[in-house]
Length: 149
Image (cartoon, rainbow, N blue to C red):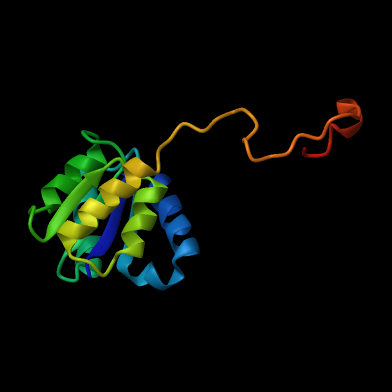
């Protein structure tokens, strides 16, 4: 049962935690969020992140970051050992929700689920009318412009 830590540019981490606890309120105790502010030094970020990691490490933890190569990710890489603490960059809501759905799995399985959730959650959405909606012929569309059809 790995703990989860989100380290991201402010306010993304806390926003993602809010979305996660909205959908999975029982998982709030195993999830921490760290919003990295623009004026923080790398040393401050690392110290705070280590403290948060210690709170949720059970003994394993998965760290999510927003952008590979950016400061939050670089700090997360310093915290990871690749065995009990792993890092995934590019955090998004489907990734986080998938992780919470399968939070009782091993760390390696959780990493695989998170990556799958992230990639499967990204798709182009059609802008045309979905095929399963019925067309209502006749009538003046201008008279119904405030009604969804």
